[in-house]
Length: 456
Image (cartoon, rainbow, N blue to C red; front, top):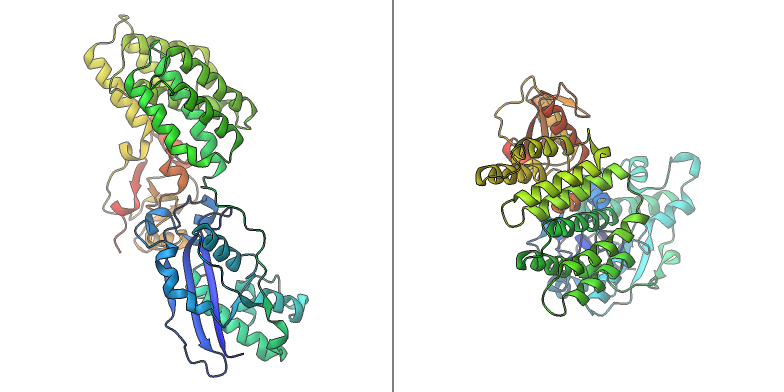
């Protein structure tokens, strides 16, 4: 064995394993001399990001949106896999499987891979009583090997090179006995990915939107166009049975190019069937529907007397939401405006603007602050600066105090700039909602985006 390639990837989601980062080191095993330059490549996976994956590796769509696609770099890197032995940790199930899936997705030829898995080696040779588990980070610690950034593809590939050599040396491993030919695990066809909770929320809010459209007993061209655009956005995710059913109904009602009031009621009925089997709590469902109704009502930039009265009626029918944001604020605003049973142009503008701020709380409430000295800071989301530990240290070094949760005494809620899938689809975390609720009770918690506070 001469030519050896150490290989690791990070992927955007577990369903398709769409690659967003790839690390490669190729060398002559005996001399250690590089065959080709080291590669640390970020890729646009052209697929959705799962929040769990983002939390693991810190890579989000905003970080890689301008990076190349796999086919654009494959011709340059496929030589790393030809006539070589590929080494990695849990290689067949994870990294090679991810590469094979993505090559198939783009109709690129899958090379004949030969590999050695350091996970398999460790399980065979490292006594279980000497390590807590066989994760690469644990094994590297056991053999005193540094990893610059764990769950970074290039750093992991580099650390794995040292781990492989340590295993071979310490246990006098005859390498040739452990070379395996990669047999592609069942590779399913690519499906555009979106996390299930995001799809569920999108469907529930869509129901609210359509209900909001029909609340004045008519469907305008703008509203019908929104339904069409929603269909075009989510038709990529019809692997979900309920979503596929909704798309089928939308296609049928859009055949003549218009949406009637009766058709909007039919659409609501189909979506409501999905909502009946979802595991969401009634309060969560109700709040998401309310958000959708408000979006639907103000889509034309104003709210009429009829729309205001019908929204108030809906709130009265769903009074179990009282005490949960934003029910009380919306109800109070409508009651005051409808005292004379008429919504003036000025009141319409105020209500519309208020609803917009409710639906976009971060943009509405974020402020810029110049100092965190002596202030309590709570972190939410994923950060361009680094891990939450790195950001926490940055804050502490400047005199700030870290709050693990939002409290009445919290001064700043700091939102990371790496958008997760939920945030990009309008879902804001519990910390944001909690900060808003505290502020409504007289607290003063500043909601700040990372870019407005952290200076690299």
